[in-house]
Length: 528
Image (cartoon, rainbow, N blue to C red):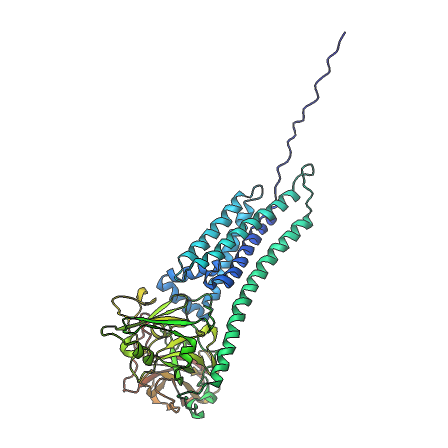
């Protein structure tokens, strides 16, 4: 009798699917994107500084932000608006990267798709940047490649580590940690190296220019600022603003960087003799030094965006006269290295009394990078958005009908001469001062006609004429002060200025945009 062997029992258990822990998966997304951004920043520093994908996206946000949002950021955050924007972008990128990683616990598909999509977004921001060139493509392409490779590598390590024992490739958790640390190192070192490359090159160039300025013989030297030009003992700011304290308002998230040896400026458009200036050409011309006050149109009543410095440069009027300005050219359109533009009225620039300058030095040294190194424009009497192009690279004589500057395109003023204004420096708002004689001090400005009188009143009472400090020149601010005998309690002080032509600033308050704020500043303080 034969017997038949029973078939072996079939197991119904299926291998457990491999799955990366959620936190680790999210971390992988963050590390891959961080490495991509760091490498992109490094490649941009070497190839085309304006092409860092992260900063290019930020620049795009600034370019297309509505006017109300731009002014809200300036008013609310002041000079911290750019760091806050970058920090906000960083948080958003972090959340997107972490979410992409968390959705890729089994397969890398979703994470890779998000990494590529973010890379393409950076690529488009770079491609549509005003400063785009073919080399600009290298940084965003490098970011995409590094992001994809980093994500696939880290995802593969983690997936093999957390596979079931029967199918594990033997990669330890220590291996995942080492890989993660490597990704962090790549991103951090690349980003840091990019900063070193950019910063080091500029500082070396600045030292060379500062040395040249020290040896230069100036055709005109600014008279020394007398001690009686400021009332610092009464609470005003120093008359000359240090380079570190000088206000900065511009649209640049990344400082445009260029060596003086590679700098040039095209002088063209509606001129008889177009030509190109090099830095050596500029330095070979008569250099003049002038004490000038600059004011930003975004300054609210009593705001901080005003500073004074000794600027060294070449008369812009002489440069344009050499080019031969053609009849009808009513606008001097200047362009910065990052392709920002400003249009100054030609008649103002050509007015010898204004003394418009192509500036190479500031307070005895080369221009700081954040203030336009190696060359910028300064046209006294006009708000900066029309007259103070930093990182200058092109000057075109044209018409307002044919071309519009960056802010004119966004509805800001076409001419925007600086309005007469003043600011109370002491006491500051909500300050507490001892009873008795209280000194109220501040500054006033009305470039280029100067200040002839400042009046102050306390608690809505009669106006009291303030003592004026010695005037340095009509294109600078002027300090003032006056005393009041006050009793304990809350007090409100107001001030108003009168310009050199006898015109007093109006009481009606207007916002900074489109052509400058006006109104009487006021401060509330307490006498104890």
